Length: 313
Image 1: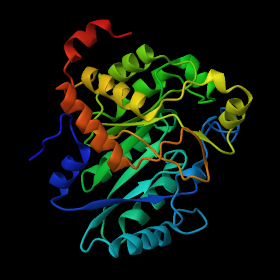
Image 2 (image 1 turned 45 degrees about the vertical axis):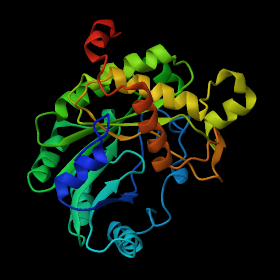
Image 3 (image 1 turned 90 degrees about the vertical axis):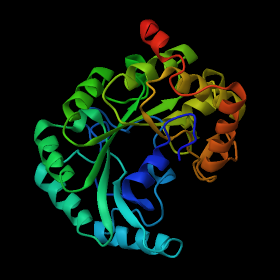
Image 4 (image 1 turned 120 degrees about the horizontal axis):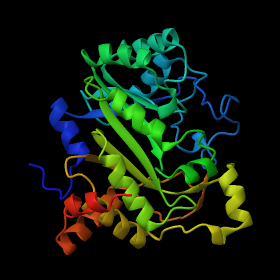
């Protein structure tokens, strides 16, 4: 029985599949329109894909090989589990439909793969692509995970995102009612944000027809433009302490739509890439601290949701 004070996505996942399902990250060899010159160069100012790709996730390997290596790694720990092919690196709908079809179906043909999670930008989706993914969703679990990062257009411009929030709204609405799970991702602490703007942004995003929300704190990662900006002027960045971030996440949970599943709250880049903040806490440790804080405050997801709608920006 679910005992969390919020809609816990891992619990939902286990119930849906009646067993353990592991995401296996894939680098499908895609790019992004703010990297290849279509909308800009250099990519998002905070992004270094090397900091979150596992060792087996390299585009020099075929999709089948990446999945087999990932499966071999996890099969030693868990017997009989199933897998989701997680197209994670860069924008995984940013290609002609024939290429997407070939890569997605290669993944689905791999042993023990029961579905897809497709990480992408909202400005790289089309009706044609969604029509095809809708067909897949009739046979498999499929989730499109949109990188939103912020609802603030000025913040999006400053991080070289290359799209505005209205494009995210349009993509989410286009995806709804197709049998495709819709995930959305926010980063808390980007320069130019305030506590109030980030809570209002989370409310606004969750009022769209999304199923799953993923959150994490801003991290300053080596070999990024943002790292250079941070080294030049650290005072321009308001990085959270661990306790500050826990309290902020509690505020977010209290104000968002109560039926949105929460998949993740933090991310911890490998030590060799991470400049700041250095919390030294794993995801399960953060979740335990968050659960304890929610209990101490006797609060829960959506506690202030109705009053929040009236204040939404």
